[in-house]
Image (cartoon, rainbow, N blue to C red):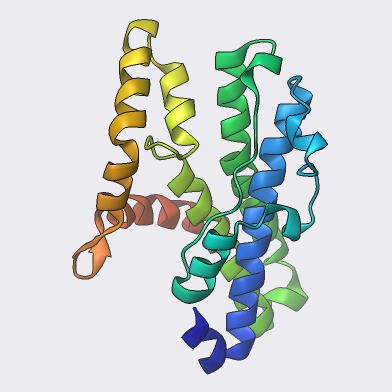
Length: 208
């Protein structure tokens, strides 16, 4: 990412800002839905805001600048404050990827405006914003702990399978996630081989 920022300052800056926007919207959505469902923990800790500084994780931000891959500060949620903990945790978890998808489609609509569509730099900036929001959304829907998908998919399973998957996810999810991110085929990781076609499907819908 640092090399990209120095070699192409304009697009590098656009990419960095787009990542900050995507992470901020993602974490804000978690905090917003948690508050709606009865848990004010995130709000009390100043996380119910669109200020990026409230959602930056020191290590995640450092890796973001160095490698282009990072994460935001997890939003604290106390399930004991939720009226229906299993269902509400799934909704809180879904809010982050859902907000990224919404922002991607909203930005995609803006790309069709004549003054944006006719400007290569403006269109490229919108495309980067859309692409990064899609990547963040699809990636977080994977059923690996600690990603949002681990809480979403366990909720939709039958109760007898739910506990087993929760246990397996917490025990091995992070390890599987790390292994899945290691470059294997033509320099690509297994996870990105999975999520790239899904991301491309949404890109085709947005930029039809």
